[in-house]
Length: 312
Image (cartoon, rainbow, N blue to C red; front, top):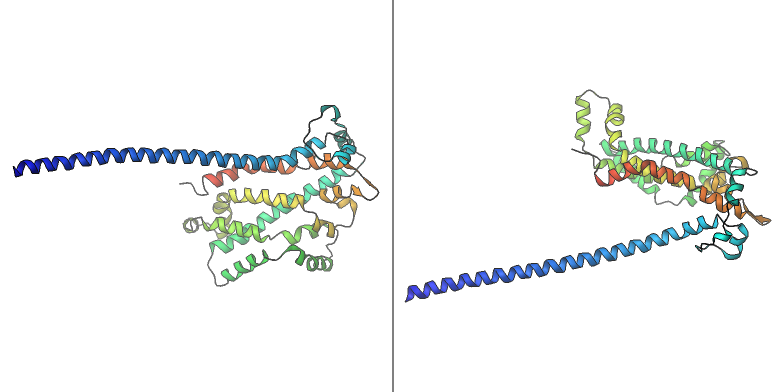
């Protein structure tokens, strides 16, 4: 009788285990269903949020583009709006833009030259500075890095007058060099390059030295191709900053023929009259260089954000 009761008890335990496993499986299914439902709700909420954010970002751009096809008088009367009125839309603003009789394309050329020089020189200088801060070990490394980061905490408005006096002493007023020189060694660009290089393996330097490469060869032939994603990101950000810069070029330049596009467009609004026809059409056309710059570097930028810098 004891053996039978023992067998019965063992069977009862096995039945309980089977029931627990069965109920546990159902609980897992319920939990997985709840998790999937939460994920769907979260994805829908995130998608809706970013859709709304995208609409808010696109709204002023769409309003400006539509305003560029309307007479300037309507802009004064009704302001910017996304109302599509085909009867009142015309290409006269763009005909006036490309017909001449103004200095728009002179300002456009000045801004283009200034942006190309600023981007190319800034990226080259900041790359070498960041390379020295990231790839070598020496006593003053942390102090120099602190000084670079400290410059990011100082607003440009505080440095504006000392820099202006320095440009006067160097006789660089009313020159392109005077506009470009203060921003060549950007702290944010150096910091970005340095952080990017800190994620690269230092064994690449040792491998280059073993193969007989010089330090300049390692920097230019081994490390430079790997940092293309960082160059792409900084080219876009630096290009946008140089293209939209207005305050410092306004202080340095003295002649109207050297004005950049933001300064030139600002001169269209005067107490004696406002040329909204050229202002709106010129502002929309001024977006093209930055758009082209993004299209040229987006592949490197996306590759760097997704795949990483080192592929093995």
